[in-house]
Amino acid sequence: PRETGKSTLFSVSYCLWSLGVDPNLRIAIISSASHQSKRILATIKQYIMTDPDIKSCFPNLTPKMDEINVNKPKKWTVDSILVNRPLTSKDVSIVSYGVGSKSILGSRFDLVLLDDVLGQHNTATQGEIEKVIEWYTNTLEKCVIEGGQIVCVGTAWKSNDLMHYLEKKKGWSCAKYSFDEEDQSDGYRWVDWPSRHTRQKLDDEKTNDIVSYNRNRRCR
Image (cartoon, rainbow, N blue to C red; front, side, top):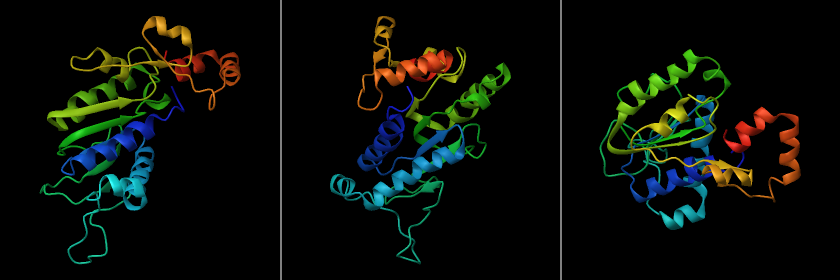
């Protein structure tokens, strides 16, 4: 469901841990719009540069410095970063995109993080739904190396959208979460976070807009 720390856990924390363990990784962060994935990358950059825990756990996770201006990180921009690594590659360490981007062509990734790639703008019609799935299968999937990993977190919008397509795809594992305890009988995992989402708050949301509540809080 929304507001449960998905981006922090997967797109930020998992990304940092993965790159800390293997600095040779080439990672793509993809969201429904490029400005969203850029915000995630900005958070990752901040952790690498300033967080004492990251520096303690992964002391070698540092920016690749420019050969000429040795005090300036190399390829350290709003949409990409390059860390110190043994690998020689044209691809940076992390790059951010919006879903459907053609700029991804020719890249190679070890890890792809799809973070909230769906929304009203790309699920409103059957044609838009199919366009996203076609981009995934014909473009993105072909950029992932053999043995690479794709992680998708977010909210499904329609019963035949990309997230439902991936749920049925061979090789994928799927977990669904809901704020409603009774959904456990349908295989959902129950989210109970009363300090942030009180039952009263959730019940009010359900009363005001049941369709939005089912999508955003129950993943239905």
